[in-house]
Image 1: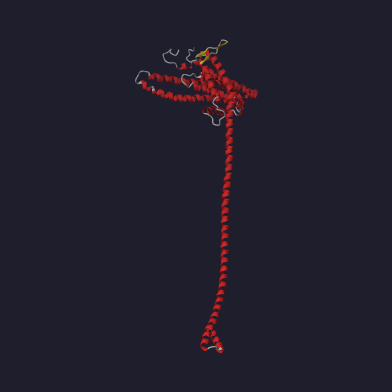
Image 2: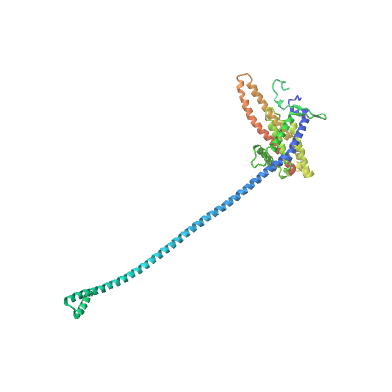
Length: 167
Length: 254
């Protein structure tokens, strides 16, 4: 045993310490270099590959979703445009239709009015003609009943009646 | 010998104890407590790096993360300090860092033995690094590796002196490397032990005035244990990074 008080300076176990240091360190080195370190490197590399792949995949998905979103917005825009176009188209059509119907109606009503006017005129003249005849017949009847059958009177009377009726 | 003076000996913790006797050609190669903790460290490192991996999961387990972090930590250290040519020596640097780190950290557990608190162990590591690096330097640059000791851009008159200084500083590398680690570990552990004795001695002094004051060294020793854990890591890091720097000198000169 060392008498210096510092066991570190006791040479008795120097050989033993060096020997076991060499043995344990060589074992450690062999295991690390042959098995452990390649394994750790492999695990880390594999993980980095997986992460890189996942990131790439995520980016692709993002791009895809952006494209889809754009398509979606575009189709909404298209649909809106189409809808407004349809709306204005049908409004125009409807207006035309209404105008047509209006025109038709006006035309037919004008014709009807004309027809009725003509007929009215006809009826009026017919009634007038009839009234002349009736007046003549009635007065003729009265005269013949009062004065008997007298063709001379009859003619002058007829003329008189006519002029009266005409008035 | 600890009880010689009546007071406990703070150096007692560094005593080598023979566990299994083993002699080879008159050399005492017995398995000691020091050997035991070397084997413990190696076993723990192997367990950590080899048996914590569950398949090839994308999400690492906790222990697996520790192994991967150490791998990337040392990997970055080698890449930054030595470059791509250093990748060949990465396994060695990794083993060196992990071995020193685990020996230091195991030593922080009470009643354990700190392998790296013995100069012979750290010196053995340092001398292997020293010769290895020198051999690498000569293999890569041939005889022109000697230019390493000739600083460029200095007056010719000063050159002999500077070459001598450069050679001496190169030769003291293994000494400074090993003494730095050994002295840090030994000093820290001795300090912990001394203050531990203070705590125990004051608490059980039987003096009503002194006993409560034992709290002071207790608080100190608590903080100091944290510092020592930091030192344990830092010294392993320094040991590994200096090896990287020496390796870089040998590969790239300067």
